[in-house]
Amino acid sequence: MKFVSFSLMLVLFLSACTGTDENLPHQELDLRETSKALQESISDYGNGIFLYDNGTGSTLVVLNGSVVDVNAKKAPYYENIDFEVRESTLWISFTEHFEINYSHKELNNQLIYRINRNEFKESFDTIKVLKNEKEIPITSVISGEF
Image 1 (cartoon, helix red, strand yellow):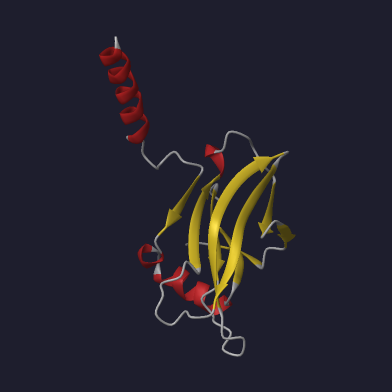
Image 2: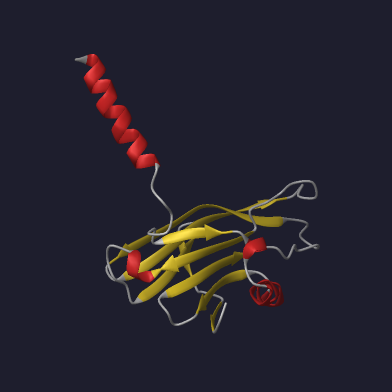
């Protein structure tokens, strides 16, 4: 009996682990694998939260903190990024931290996520951002190819 229960749990666990990312409502992208035009655009705009919309139901969310304030001598980085639809609003939440001794560290200060609007269980018509549990405006929305 224990063997059957263990086998069943193992099968369920392994089947849950073999899913693909293509049907996820959001997925993190590697900046190095994005187009050169997108990389240049991100570096041109500086720090902030940006939406890149191509009009096909796919949107890129960029959290950019790569510009270090040399006067303040601290570098921002991001953790706990989450996407949740509540009452027709997509809430993008994250925690922003600052690192003083950043010269020899690899920080998560430039993150890109692809939002697949059609893959969320609920539809949304508004996108809002929570940084450290406080609502903040989106820095800019950019339309076009990416």
